[in-house]
Amino acid sequence: MLSEVVEWANRNNGVFSMKYRGGDAYDHFDVPGEVYLQYLATTSKGQFMNWVIKPNYRYQMRTHH
Image (tube, rainbow, N blue to C red; front, side, top):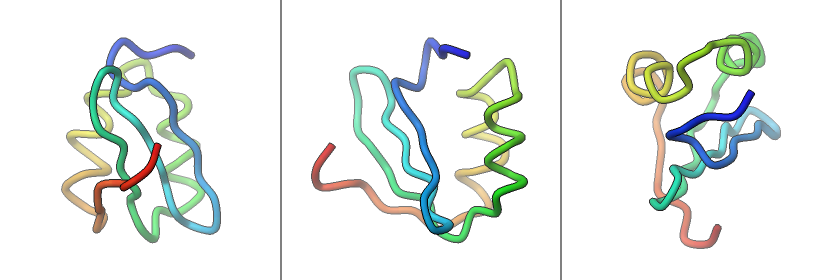
């Protein structure tokens, strides 16, 4: 499902990577596969990022997109 807020997102080896449309990209660490599946299923990607991912998982800005 496309998002108005998130341009792209993926998960590899527990690292959930995503990029905001017109903004920065981030890596979120130690995100379980179950949480990523919940992200994929949600109708509001931006709200899920703000309520579930950002407050609960360590992250850093990606230096390359």
